[in-house]
Amino acid sequence: MNEKAFLSVRDLSVAFEQGDNQSLAVDRVSFDIAKGETLALVGESGSGKSVSALSILKLLPYPSASHPSGEILVQGNDLLKASDDEMRKVRGNGVSMIFQEPMTSLNPLHTVERQISEILNVHRGMRDSKARERVLQLLDQVGIHDPESRLKSYPHQLSGGQRQRVMIAMALANEPDLLIADEPTTALDVTVQAQILALLKDLQRETGMAMLFITHDLGIVRKFADRVCVMTAGRIVERGPVAEIFDNPKHDYTRHLLAAEPKGEPPATDKDKPIVVEADDLKVWFPVKRGLMRRTVDHIKAVDGIDIAVREGQTLGIVGESGSGKTTLGLAILRMISSTGRILFDGNEIQTNSWKEMRPLRRDMQIVFQDPFGALSPRMSVADIVGEGLKVHFPGISENERDRKVAKALEEVGLDASTRHRYPHEFSGGQRQRISIARAMVLEPRFVMLDEPTSALDMSVQAQVVDLLRDLQKAHGLAYLFISHDLKVVRALANEVIVMRQGKVVESGSSEQIFDAPQTDYTKALMAAAFRLETAPEGVVST
Image 1: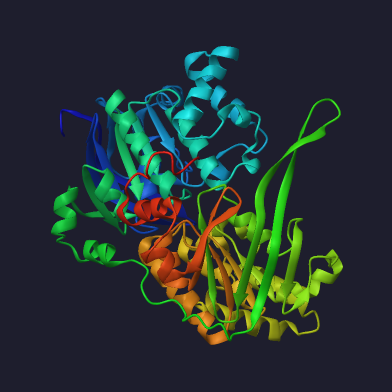
Image 2 (image 1 turned 90 degrees about the vertical axis):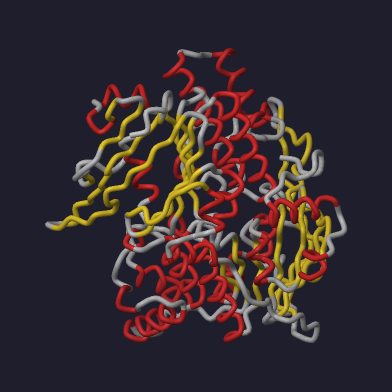
């Protein structure tokens, strides 16, 4: 054991009971982290990264989870032997954790202020004005614009990136000695990602905290970590200083990870292709109401006068920061939220269509969401999930025909059709996203909105999903509206790109033009952050 280590994990194994059987998720893993040091734990979904991290705080689903071997020593004390009361003192105080999916980690019934204040109250006895002052300081630290206006916000009123920043503020509230960051930048756009990583590094320098950084993004690891452990199938297969691992990887799996990134060319731009979806001067303004009578005093201009056209077999990429209006634009085009301006589908005006008139069009206008786990009902089998749309839009087909279509859709997205009677929790993140894609494709749509469909996936799985989407587009002539903060994925899929900021288009054009010769400072900042992981120029990017 390293005597200078704040955390020492020794021969840790984690097993899960499955009926009468036991499966080993982590197999004799060992690592140390010293104060002021960042250790990255990298690997694909199911490699055991998060299970190892959750073991440190004893957050696994005990008693179904067990530890056949190992010690987790924090300053010499074995946390695996600690009582519940002892662990309560450790959690959030000595050791904090940032979770990957903020929407499922934040309480939907409590405001931002209440959720952060609760931590300060429990661990430090802070209340009222003192707690509020600290909450405002934390929100400002993590880059929340105008933090006072967000105190009374609920999680659903924040963008994905803003919710993740609130999670980071909660984790840092008590200035922990060890911060466990489980994919903390997955939901963030590239510029804010660079800012958050810089913030974590600054806080680490100021406080000397140790950091266990779990990620599938090797670009971040190279910039951010001191040492790295590479995991697969529950074991650490390679470890060492970051520079050594990146410059001279020894293990085949490490080389596989380093080589994995979205590749290939987007479809060639063809102005002769028919326009499937078109919008003119589209606006989504949310009223700001104040006072006793709740009068409208201002508007949040989430989408402010945007024109788009998506052609058959083509992909329009929408990029920008969290809160720039990307998803709101997509939802407005699908008529899932109210908007003004013209929206045409196949040349027909649909902006004035009623809910009943829109229903037949839904089979032709599909959506794939960002979070595959949250988008799939845990109580429904995969067969029921994928077949649900068929029941709605093709009620006359037989049960056998519906099952045949479900099986065909699953096979088309690269899944074994025999698994269709399983449930979502039995699949990996990448497999769940393939299920989400199959659910959309089974209806044979003409237009698909893809809202951050690869952001939560491993790099190698991202590449596979990009290839899958490209193959499906080519086979069926699909028109894609592809929304993402991952510019490498956008570059591999989109032939036209729109850059959004604060509800407006700041730049648009062909993929080559936007990526190779950006015109505005804002677009240049996005490219710098995405492809070199540098902090955006000061004053260019607001949060």
